[in-house]
Image (cartoon, rainbow, N blue to C red):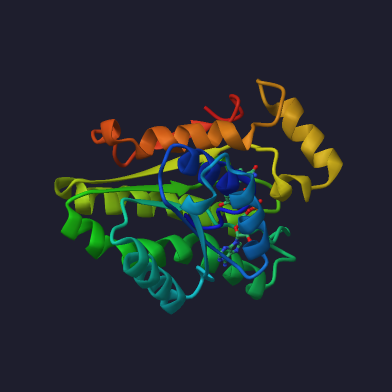
Length: 239
Ligand SMILES: NC(=O)c1ccc[n+]([C@@H]2O[C@H](COP(=O)([O-])OP(=O)(O)OC[C@H]3O[C@@H](n4cnc5c(N)ncnc54)[C@H](O)[C@@H]3O)[C@@H](O)[C@H]2O)c1
């Protein structure tokens, strides 16, 4: 579970740990304290949430984290690629560094993590991978060329890996949330948030817990015939 200490990832970690799963949260140094307080807030499930400092934009760090998880816990049934960043600016003003930073975390990160866990899942003959894409990857969004390109690329990655491992008991799906009430959205200008709500037929932001429940559904043992799919969860913002 990458970036699983706050926001959508925090809600997914919470739900899975409370369901009885052992959850490995991979995150940046600043996520460590948050993961610890998240663990402490879990009803009787604190010991099931473990933090591994990992920058998902670096392949070797992903491989080391996966090795550490395997050493401590023996198997990896689920991978949720949730870590993501924004560096918003119109294309004219966007620097090459801003373009590359977002592509590296939001698209290369999931590729690195999938590459790091896939052999284990293939040996197990079982795995569930969920990639957190975005409505922006489907519809585009003003000032988010880097983010939209990464999230659209993640859908292509999802479908391709799904094809490659479909016979081997592994499913790979994407979830494309609309505007969800998290720190990432709160960093947007207030006017942009208001416009997003106005443009959403459901007339509100989504909740991280709503996305978490959809992810849990896709991770379920009974969801084995769902693969290569993109699930929208956006209050009708994009259909
Ligand atoms: N909030 C929304 O409205 C929304 C909508 C659609 C998609 N998403 C996607 O959902 C995911 C979670 O979003 P959120 O709103 O909860 O964001 P958030 O900013 O609250 O949380 C993201 C987490 O990822 C971690 N992270 C960032 N870079 C990392 C790296 N290099 N290595 C490891 N961890 C890293 C952060 O430290 C943080 O804990 C992201 O992929 C985001 O693009 C969010």
